[in-house]
Image (cartoon, rainbow, N blue to C red; front, side):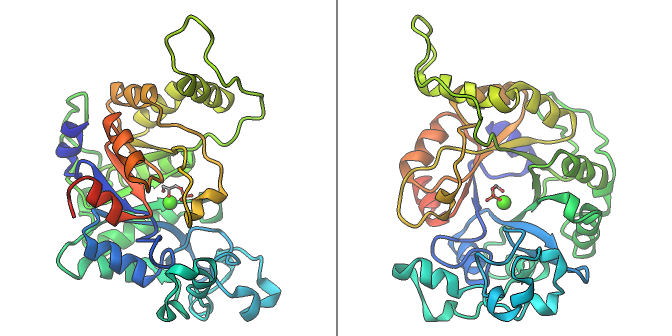
Length: 339
Ligand code: G3P
Ligand code: CA
């Protein structure tokens, strides 16, 4: 809700540039983050991984095939996880040309040869320019990167993005909505993984955290229509079955709340449109109106992913969503009269 966002110093609605402006430039590269920053996005979103020699880098996939020419440069290790490459090796890869091939209408010669970026380079971008976006950092598959939460804390403290108090429990008491002693923060931490949420909470109890939610596709057959005589819509009924097939939404919310999250990041049904790479995944709707209401009843914010279409942004906003991960920050900022 607006009150909770304000107490935490989080814009309402928050516009979170998903892997940068990843519609107009190759995801997680310099131009994608520069565009997002200069457009006025509130946060630069990134997926954190760690190289073999301990550097923190931003890349979504655990392997390099989709977004780089790893097969040409390291043919013997084309399928190897990011964690098996040194930073110097990763920096040899072209992380931009794939975009020109995939999206010829948005291709640019300058995208050829773009590099995988470190957290340090993205922080530097966030600190440059005049808009000063925050960083919205995801720890993904923490089993691949034991201790990455502590590495992240040390990095953020060393660069004054979080204070020395980040490692201590907020002293003030909660007003029910949010612990008012939270330091309004330009960093938000996010993860799908319960062990990582717990590690983030242990390392940085004073930094806002979001538990991401993904239902996957249930294996049980689902009914398309709500039973007659109920006042639940077909869409809500369908969504509820999907959730029930994976986990109970209320349990997710209670878990998030009990483990220090200030909100949840649910998936949304994606709209069909050209060039949205996230179409390759099949998302469940975890931001149906009843789910948003339930999250708010738990005093949790809702930052939904990944929403690119004006009509979707408007609808989810009307339903109470507090922030949006978007591949198209320009579209989101315009939709919310911020551009
Ligand atoms: O971090 C929110 C959203 O990015 C989660 O999905 O797979 O794009 O990281 P993914
Ligand atoms: Ca992410």
